Amino acid sequence: MAYSEKAKGYFSTELEGIKEAGTFKEERFIESPQAANIKVEFPTGSPPKEVLNFCANNYLGLSSHPEVVAAAHEGLNERGYGMSSVRFICGTQDIHKDLETKLTEFLGTEDTILFPSCMDANAGVFDVVLGKEDAMIADRLVHASIVDGMRLCKAQLYNYKHSNMEHLEEKLKETQDCRFRLVITDGVFSMDGDIAKLDEICNLADKYDAMVLVDDSHATGFMGKTGRGTHEHCGVLGRIDVITTTLGKALGGASGGCVSGRKEIVELCRQRARPYLFSNTVPPVIVAAASKVLDIISKTTDRRDKLEEHTKYFRAKMTEAGFDIKEGVHPIVPIMLYNAKLAQDMARDLYGEGIYVIGFSFPVVPKGQARIRVQISAGHDREHIDRAIAAFTKIGEKYKILGKQKNEIIEMYGL
Ligand SMILES: *Cc1c(COP(=O)(O)O)cnc(C)c1O
Image (cartoon, rainbow, N blue to C red; front, top):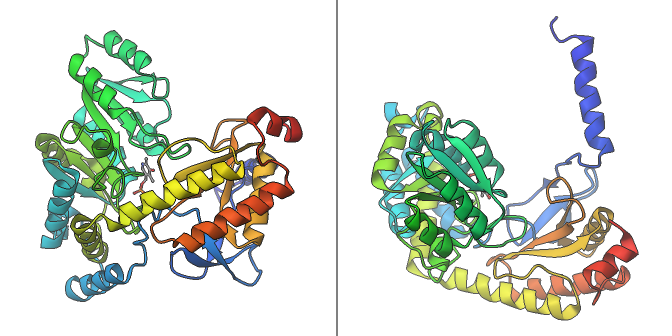
């Protein structure tokens, strides 16, 4: 037997280390569909409890929307369950092509290729676009899937300080001798909910003859006046060369992702992107439902408008209540607590009040930056938002942090 005592001992010690560091992740079992109201079994083994969900990426409240579920049923009935094939052998149905066309129209690009996930889109795209004579210039806080995608690519890797345009310009100057340069950023950064300065990035890219790639997973469907994404929000529609994004967040939340952008790049992905060539096609049931999602959000901006209204309201009321929140306009609202235990304790107490939120601490966020990350959804009603604000206020009072500045909270609780 090759699974030796030595190997087993090593893995066990690693697991113990994770537990000792306080970063061991426990899954929580939800016994209902994804929605504003969910039933959660927590701690595991306790009877399920009804809580309001404030930690899903269900930004538009479409994850269990009746029309989306009906479209999924129809897709299942008409096109079956699985395709048992990758796209280029016998895994492409007409509905895959339709969805790609709808995504292209919605995102305002030239063409789109579906991937099993955005993680796969990011794993595939860099190696297709760039070779060793080229440079990738990435924001230091890009998503893990971009980091992995860049590792699979032979181009030279540069990074710039988070959203620091002077530093980006320095890197663009440094790489003038490369054949192609690609500036790489998330549209919205998931821990702070802050938005990339895409207008300035595009201007710099024009000035230095570089291409731009944006991962818009936390923006597609609701950022910008008609929800097209961060590029719409920043007024640079049509200027982003490559957009990668997910169907797994606002767009129904099942799974799937895409690369959308310049048509030659997308076409080359169809020829060479490894997760596209060697991983199974997105199942018809998801394609049918995602297609319905795009119909819904292309027809009306009601959902993204409601989300924006909720977000403004929640941010204003929480600030008024005396919480230290990171400023911004995104439905990711970080409630800053700095101390990891305080974040855990408050999240637990909020759960007791029927509000489901998660405390984030190192290594998910930098040391001394612990927080509760609230995510607002168009699936919430105003009454849900009010209940969350009331519960936060009650628990904030308990911990005596209302109206306190950063240094005061750190003085009370330490880092
Ligand atoms: C969620 C997320 C992904 C991963 O999307 P999947 O489709 O679930 O693989 C990739 N990039 C960013 C920025 C994300 O937020």
